[in-house]
Image 1 (tube, rainbow, N blue to C red):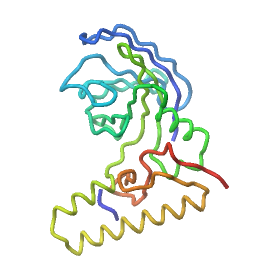
Image 2 (cartoon, rainbow, N blue to C red):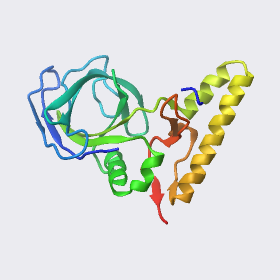
Image 3 (cartoon, rainbow, N blue to C red):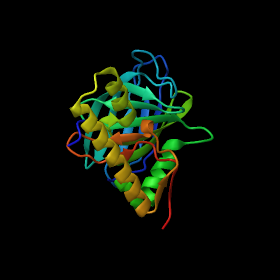
Length: 222
């Protein structure tokens, strides 16, 4: 054991003053599948995220259909080249956020997820794509299952500790699983052009399954 479906496309519009803690207007447009709406609450806390310029701590509400919804506190997690990620408290969900411009990585990943079922065994579960106007910017959000451990982080932590038989076993098990996943993906016609340790994750502690965390550069052919 290694230590460590569905989706929707909806659009929500949120208009508010940047210095206000009150949502002035939110218009979700629910469709089928899991999450029908996603709204980020107004208000800044602990500064703003580097890329999407969103509050590092605030709340968001997810509509699940049939009148059910859940509100979560979100916490800035990390950022990449163009996107910020936020962890949602009390659940296994993560949000990728990006200001919509010439490129929209969240939309690209959403389109791949919905149009290419073959890739779903090799990426985290996706629960919805949403867009929200916040202040003067349009922000896209991708709601995904949180990956508990990134391979790069695991290796960084290992470098800090003394090498033991347990850590070596864990490392070898992880490497073998990554290689197996690469082979399985290739056999299924899935080719990732961004398969590096910072983009490889292990979803949970009870499953050795390995996934690609960002999959915009995945191609598929049989």
